[in-house]
Length: 199
Image (tube, rainbow, N blue to C red; front, side, top):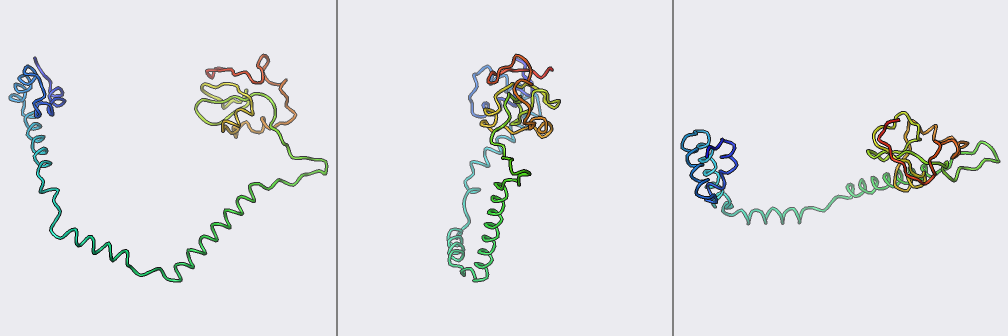
């Protein structure tokens, strides 16, 4: 049985542990007798094993535990924080709270309506949207930036699953006067249609 160096490298640990059948062990021994690189690998592996078995490497220096306990006690019993430190922490917390509060209020503020008869939109435009498999973005069915595999799902379902509209085709999507009849013929509102991206 003629072995390559790679075969020997894979089995070197089993050779050291004597976990090979006699035929394989003899073949590895013959190769190790002829190949200087594999023999050096065997000797290096045995040296590493001997080093890990030497418990002196893992022993702690004398007095290490006492020094560690002394340092820990000194850290725990250290001087308490000054009043200035507490004031800085309190001021930072107040600033962060104010920023968070302002951001939330700004986020939920409704834009000013342009007419007394206007009302903010309470529903998304009807019709299916194209959902891509490789991201959490939905597109109008004819978006030129829709690539890869996609399927048509109801708008409400896409929003509930956490998809957000494509920035590039959002203007087309948000045309409120667009109704379900303007979508591709033969596609029902809730029906899922899969595509491989070919349009």
